[in-house]
Image (cartoon, rainbow, N blue to C red; front, side, top):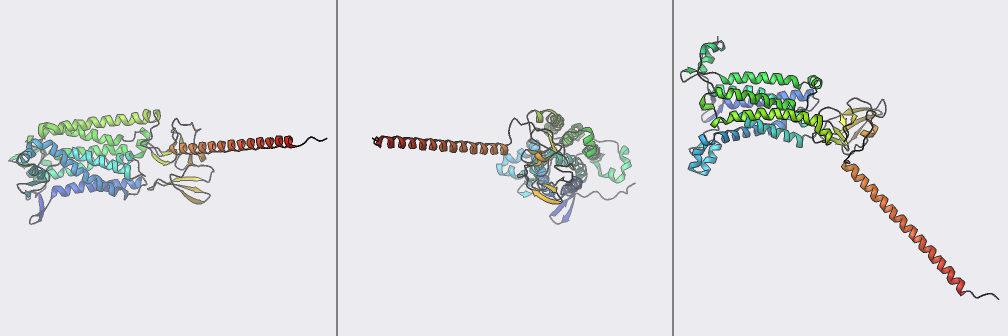
Length: 426
């Protein structure tokens, strides 16, 4: 049994400067996701430090999204009163300024935080981390949000909030008398929904974690994005089932959080279906390379594997496969410019991604190339230049032939003139 001690404090500090345990737990949850992601990055042969900037962008965005969604959901019941006083008073209430002084920001909605954090993080990877494939990264990072949320729920324990209906404390006595005392609110023991949700979040993370392992993904032929959307399925279903069990004061206005949870669930299911539709049908039907990484003219790093493919999805190169000779080995280096290092005859040649046009031509493993319906822009530009040179050559040859004809005509004219001027011999 855990001994009965003083009630749990909500914050600590000196004077008016106070740090809440809720804030520390949220920060711990975010750093846990960062450290886990860095470990997985190392196993994926990616630089772990490249994830730090992604975290510095996505984590604050998640906090902003959580606050915005809370304001939207609770506007009628909590913030409308301040807007009735004045517009600026209402805006101040959004950032915790009430009654003329700062009272602290209270109120975050997890769904909004997860949604905005994921969107901003994926956009940052797409535009600023050119060596990374978006769904390869999100399939590893997004499921760990469940683990972060499992840790973050303990902030509700420190604040004594987000609990359920009164229940018999004897069924929870195995957690110790101290825990029972902390959950006794208003003279009644409340169902610790934060603990239940925390345990189910850990369970969901462990289940999805199995599917993020490379051998499992390859064996099941999972489409990229499957585990990313699985997060929305699991968390949406969990919140939809847990939300009605809360005490009425913690159910958002008109049960909008329940509606949002089912939207999360539906979005996840739709996303998984569309991932497979895109992988198995759309991308090859319409020659879509939007999710592939372009590393050279007409050479792409396939988004659902580590193969290099051409426009028609023929495999150009595979990791470790030979190219023109048996001793020529291809080595892929996923640096910032997505450049390719070719070890040729014992010497390393660094070929920039834009200038590497010989990959498809030198590959033994490439199947016979089919001319694409839409030419590569660079190849198209080169054909244009060749056509221009050919036309200029034709024009020059025409000019030469016309000049020769004119010279011949002049010579003939001169001969005729000389014959006319000559006197007949007697």
